[in-house]
Length: 109
Ligand code: FES
Image 1 (tube, rainbow, N blue to C red):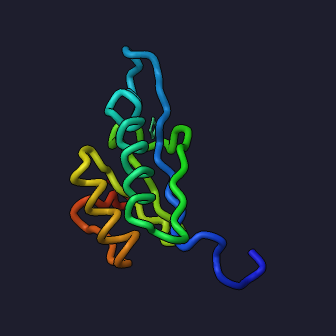
Image 2 (image 1 turned 180 degrees about the horizontal axis):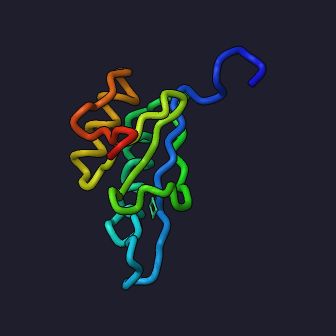
């Protein structure tokens, strides 16, 4: 990093990795992460959130806790299982700058 402000105000990586049905670790795609990620992206656009980028990600290695996403530059992890969870992150964290504690994943979770 060479200093200055980040290119995006918030950069979201939402795991949409899909494994075979019987895989021991499961995967976020089997927990509706593709639909939730699409919803998040559409709602962010509708809300006119500037400087917010929402990308699909491959496995983030927290599969058992999925569906998971991580927000940079803060590196705050969330488990968002419903549209209501997504709305809370969009309005609380990405719009108002207040992370949503009840949905956060800690380093040991
Ligand atoms: S499949 Fe989503 S974190 Fe691994």
